[in-house]
Amino acid sequence: MLEGVALQIGLIQQTLTPQLSQATMLVFAGDHGIVEAGVSPFPQAVTAQMVLNFLQGGAAINVFTTQNNMRLRVVDSGVNHQFAENLDLIDAKIALGTRNFLHEPAMTAVQCTQALEHGAKIVDAQIAEGCNVFGFGEMGIGNTSSASCLMSVLCEFSIEDCVGRGTGLDDAGLTQKINVLTQAIAYHHLNGRDVMQALETFGGFEIAMMVGAMLQAANRQCTLLIDGFITTAALLVAARLQPNILHYCVFTHCSNESGHKKMLDYLQVKSLLNMDLRLGEGTGAALAYPLVLAAINFINTMASFESASVLQKI
Image (cartoon, one colour):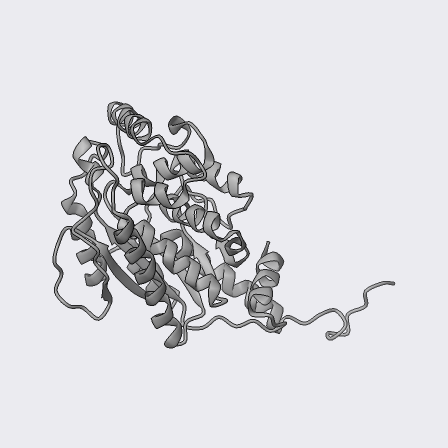
């Protein structure tokens, strides 16, 4: 698998001596109107509280990005809170959260386009500072519901195959979540070919902005480190819009959220790690980054049998 990663990044960069520089973790945050329907055990306010925790350095993603010398940038894509200015916060807010997609599309076509464009501009700005490898993470109470609906519609899976416990639903909460999302999918009546309409209907601002960022990062020949369930749902949308994006993606881990393994199988990809994580934030991508570095380092510096004068046959 390390050889595969090394070959992949060499092909991305079109060189036999690939280099990774200024690794940047982009954590996109947004709130979701569907939370009103009781799909999460946590209130919407937790999204803003977690963003503040990121900015104060207290979250798991802070620990892992610091350890692995990755720059962390938090993107306010649409959190229901007004944040003070912070050097590590990118203000790209579309609105104070999406609408409740149980009754209406989560966002307008204009808002969705704005999110895609903001994501591309954010990536361009980081590339201008020397970045050529991006980790993608997210934060948003209710966003496993968005990801589950996107997966169900685009992959044409039953919603039961896509829904998990998210941030810790009990059995009754899981049943409620399945019932709500079943109603939402039936109400909007989309099919797997309606990619942009599905994103507008069920997506979050953070998911749509991540789609735009992923597409631009691949377009600029960067390496994409794909995190867990929600991030892979964004990548699923991006891959429908531009299938070649998969060549630029390293799938870093398989989440413990039940639908993630099914989505990875659908995309016909393998993850580097399987550690039963269900945390989001980009943590799986940050944890796997040292393995990606190891792949680059061995292809660049490890001696071959020939160069080390090792006998290959007796």
